[in-house]
Amino acid sequence: MTERIDGHTILIGLMAYPIRHSMSPTMHNNAFAKLGLNYAYLAFEVTNETLPAAIQSIRTLDMRGSNISMPNKQKVIPLLDKLDPAAKMIGAVNTIVNDDGILTGYTTDGIGFMKSLDDEGLDIRGHKMTLAGAGGAGTAIAVQAALDGVSEMSIFNRHDESWENAKRNVALLNEKTNCKATLHELENRDDLKAEIADSFIYTDATGVGMKPLENETLVTDPSWFRKDLIVFDTVYAPRTTKLMQVAEQAGVAHIFNGLGMMLEQGAAAFKLWTGKEMPVDYIRDILF
Ligand code: NAD
Image 1 (cartoon, helix red, strand yellow):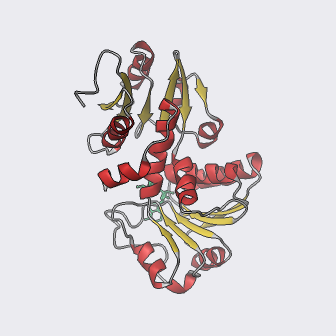
Image 2: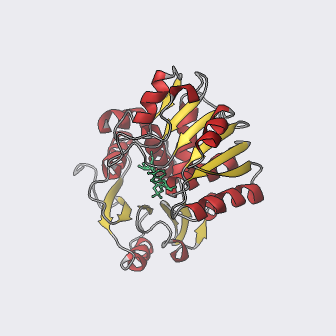
């Protein structure tokens, strides 16, 4: 790191709270070093209260940009100059790019989801997806997949604080994209089984399977899965979730955890800042 930092080093931030646990600084700084790029990526503890000053500092210090995470993903929007169309639809920003003082907000989680499938040679465009969850990850996945050409989407959510968001996502997809979306209650097990049976891919973006729910899965019966279904869990810790184990029992050929999505959302931000492709395989080896 010290060999790389000089008077010309360009700063990129990560503004969130809490944030000290994040893998993103390791990811980006190793990628800069590998490619010989004169950038440095630092995490800053930024709350909703300190966010306006932190965003202004991107302009003041002529930083190239920043990642944004909780609790700032929505709050940052009025502080920016422009929004990428997908970020506008999603209503959240995880990446800011500074072009001569003009700050543009992007959301790369959905891009990361689609790219991680592309990386394995799987094209879900023109097909139907059943998606559980309509929080931050579920919304980003729904919007990006619909914009990219997924033709049908059955969105399931339980009746919690995200139910209204699920309703909004379905309406948004039907109004603004060519994807035909329908809303379903996660409590209706027969409906979930039927929609999965009719889908090309089943994606779980609920976090069930991650601590403290690491022994749980929304689908417990392997007979719900066909061998040629794609099963995607956005969770990456643990590496193999309960859902993935059920898919394995069913003999499903293409089973994903959220690792590829996580790497590719970072790679998409890296490309927006530097114009270069992140060396994803190299970074995967370093991080995992
Ligand atoms: P969130 O809190 O914004 O949304 C959670 C969603 O899951 C909501 O739709 C909620 O209704 C649903 N949910 C929560 N608990 C549930 C339960 N017990 N049963 C059924 N549904 C339940 O969270 P988020 O930020 O969208 O994150 C969701 C998951 O996605 C987490 O596991 C997170 O780690 C993962 N994620 C992965 C990546 C990646 O790059 N791989 C990126 C973002 C999020």
